[in-house]
Image 1 (cartoon, rainbow, N blue to C red):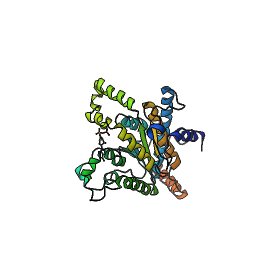
Image 2 (tube, helix red, strand yellow):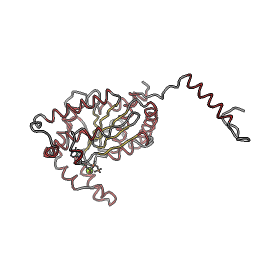
Image 3 (cartoon, protein in one colour):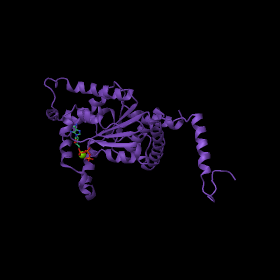
Image 4 (cartoon, rainbow, N blue to C red):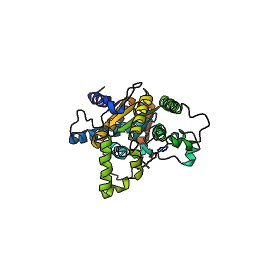
Length: 309
Ligand code: ATP
Ligand code: MG
């Protein structure tokens, strides 16, 4: 490992939820944590370095075409999901990235099992796919509002032990993806209740931000404690060796962005994708083609700048 890689691994270590550990979100993670990066200015520099690294690794991932990476982003409203996606993915070739946002399921989606719609939008090999909200809504919003299950057309007698079963099914689904070359990184943007209040107020006060505000967000805020419990349990039950959760301190947007970029960079470093090796025969064939192409140069064409005088 180079020192740069080691620095990234050390930086993200406090955010990782150890598989098998029991998480109490309020006690175990601080939304305003900023560790050793004390200033926004220093943070900006690191983010630029991080995104450059991501861009370099993404081109290799794309060229190798063996692995895909799925980034799962979960958070309460106003935690900064959209901004995180925008900043972390700057500089990455859009051809190799997909972003999918999941809202209330449609009637077609409800006609299938609950994992169906997420399976439809997975990244292909070579791609980085981002889920803005994800299959985890099925153990978050649905858990906080169990009446949503009534729309899911579940067979009789399947409600008992449903949450435990869903954690298990999600872990198994992710295991299948992981065993087949798809790496999953899960980011939970951890926002404090007070910071959410401040951000909602800003959305009301600033005209250009009014469109971001919805009355539904205020209704969900009433369920704060129930969400914290659902998040804690989700983190405890679904952080696995093959698809670990990272709790990203989200009270400072600039910090959350660096942390998210670092987790993704670390994942790519671990995958270590390589450009495909070109065989000796293929290289020789390329040389022959080159000779043919050079012979096709029109009369009086400019000399090839790559050929030494
Ligand atoms: P933004 O507000 O920034 O546009 P958002 O992700 O909050 O982004 P909204 O349209 O405001 O998007 O909200 C989507 C809603 O859909 C959320 O309240 C979420 O909980 C809900 N949702 C997502 N998945 C499910 C699901 N499987 N079942 C029920 N509700 C869901
Ligand atoms: Mg919203």
